[in-house]
Length: 349
Image (cartoon, rainbow, N blue to C red; front, side, top):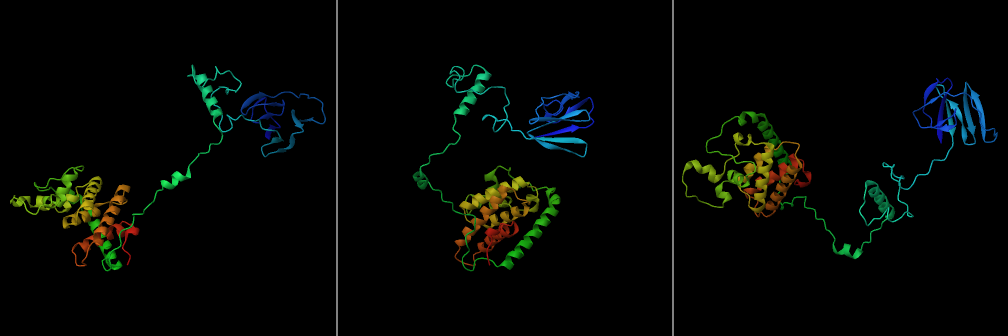
């Protein structure tokens, strides 16, 4: 169906937007410039065509003409009922970009031989069209259901923490208090970060590089814990921190970038997966969590969740409520679950 706009007072040359030019009864493309022509005559067939004259323009009405109307700008809109041209299968989904005719089935094999390499771009495109025409419209995969039954995948959820033994989990009031204290510490660290960052470290404090995993484990945990030794032959008091590990002083943690904080947290979490909980580890984990800025990156989310699950696993193995590790483990789980909003890991009251 075509919509034709005809002006009652058109200039000698104007742009013809309609697909069908009414004054010449010829089909034209939009944007084509045509001259205003004099009144013409048509075949005198009363049933099929009937001409009307209006202000020097001829409007052709035929059997497919549904009528015309006058719009607000003075243009007549003539409505023709026509049948859209049929498109080939190649152009059904998208228009053809290159002027290459499709390869018919009746053409010689020499022109569309799929077994030989194309000699020019035209032959290449024709071979592509031929291969596409040989593909079936619908393809059904033949799947053996017996193979699917043998290779089933079972998904096991490991996102939640292990439940604490009876009487080992903290109360909700205790958790809320710890979250409040932790929030105040984070604000204090953020407020005084620039001051402590400018402070000089002692000569014996040599911070490892960010990618030095063993160096950070020695630095934070000390050689006694890292090497699993109880005594050292060296008696110099200046090496005590090297044996016992450097505490997380503000002058140290304030110099850590977020990338280094995440890296050190990852190093210590991996070490904790294979070793027992020690006080040096608890102090550094608490300090690193206090320096971890929100919003967390996906890697940091995964690390703290892994840390909370490991703490819950160690807590589940405790036999005595008076164990000194219980409070520290509950604190780590509380901070990860309550402050960093990993609610599925929280201890339920």
